[in-house]
Image (cartoon, rainbow, N blue to C red):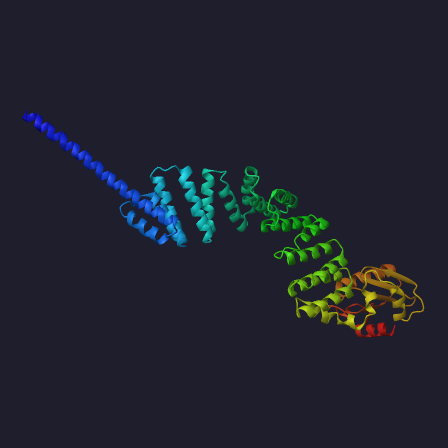
Length: 446
């Protein structure tokens, strides 16, 4: 009987111990659950300071809890302390790994978050490293592919960016921003047709017609058309952006540039004149300057001079315009020079005959830069480029005179803008050099 009582006492004691242990663990569980719930609620309500305080307090007893570290990282991120947030996301990642949490789930999300924050604080190298870690585990992670490509593009590693982006758009055909970045990457390799292909897919399938992203696509499309020398298509595409305030000035100046490349100078001028009231002074000057430069290249020097005058009135001292006006002010003083410098002069031979007061011209040799007139007793060379004469010019001229007029021992040389400072007329024994001032008086008298 006594033995039975002892046994009963032991069983009761064991039962009470088990119940007590259960109560202890229940209290611990409920306390833990309440603590984590409090932290989660604070984070959801954006009470980041409160969430951080609760997490730090609970972490004293649970230093290896990766969920707590993750919550602390979220709190730091919400407070804008990104460096601290990165530190705790990294700690959470390590703790999760130590606790045997699947690397293909939680860890990848942590890596993405760490990379995002490193990117935000401009630590591109570290950000890229974490994106690559994600791709090592999941090569088809679209977020990592795109974000890594952005960093690679910014750091000029275009080849690797292209590799990632081609995987991305093949996997996700509707990743339009990926296609856009791929187009920009193709352009870095001068693959304009490939870039245009990507942009046309976006333009065809993107649903929001007035979205700023689509305007960026159109602008880049126009650039590709231009680089492929489809100037008409480029102009038409830029025209679509003239009603978009953010792109108006850039699109108009680009249209001017393409009209010039298309050799449609009048349309370029008309376009600028039509929109001159809407253009800022600096962009108006830029547009006129482009047109003037092409006129000068085309040897339509008076048309260029007229635009330089407009630019000087719009923005005094714009680029080298003042120097150009000073250099070519002779054009304003001597309007008769227009025919002399014109690419396709009318009546210039008769005019030059009057200038040198010749009764007749036996032979005329015409080249792009100079004309040679043989009046029987004298060879006259008129330099028609609106620039000072260089040694190379003189060597070319003397070669022509020697070939065309082998019996001539000398020639008379005329240039409105004189000789280059490096050229000495005494070096050329056959040349009888007429000073610009004397030549201009002869022109005025003619």
